[in-house]
Image (cartoon, rainbow, N blue to C red; front, top):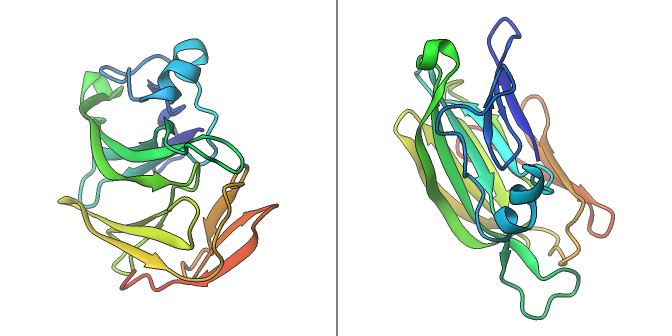
Length: 208
């Protein structure tokens, strides 16, 4: 897992490996430690400081703010007693808030490990696209072993309107590796891996 964000001039601001939040000097950001949970922490982050989950982290600028950023990331839990493929999967999506106006512009984590969504979720697939209003953000994350996806709205007040939508192909437990993405205009969303194929969806950036 990895996510990074830059300034409008293309300069790196900070990044995350899904285990820690690091500043642009490749040093641990103030309060940027301990963002991993459950088996992700004990099985991976404690030894390598790297999450193995593709698209397991996402950074978005907070709407209507010049200095605040939201960092989203998942965990890894033993939730599947009789798995077809692998017994560990994501049990929750978390968020932290970074304020880049602090620590001389190096940033500081001012709020950490807020639970955004809790369910048996896919092992990867954090993806976002701008709202039609060009200020807010839509965030999508798939549920495990279903054809359902959670659609969340990020506004200046935080996460709201968490909606579960079910349509199309039912995914098997073999969801690794996989990738999700939007078309540049946001009108198409797709999700792919070898075992479940290429899945295209229409998306409305005004309504989610």
